[in-house]
Image (cartoon, rainbow, N blue to C red; front, side):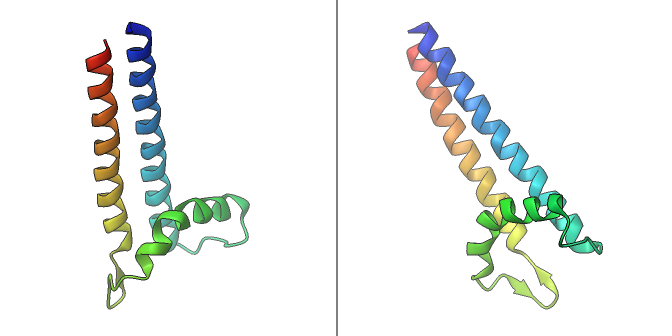
Amino acid sequence: MFVVAEVVKSLALLISLVFNILYFLLVTRIILSWVAADPYNEIVQIIYRATDLILAPLKRLPLQIGMLDFSPVVAFILLSVLKNFITNILYQIAYRLG
């Protein structure tokens, strides 16, 4: 059972890494929205496609006050809660197995 516990811990670390990459991409998208980034640049398009999966449902909500859009803030909060929930469950499973 020790091996299974270590696999579950590794899965939790992998999921945590994926969420950290999503955080980085969201911050990058926020910075790109402040500067005049070329929308035809391939890297910019990849960042926008990856973060649109998260931000598109939130943009439908009334989260914009004047010129400020709070959907990235809500996305950070939701991602953080989801990351903590998933990784804590996986760590608890690993603890009980090992």
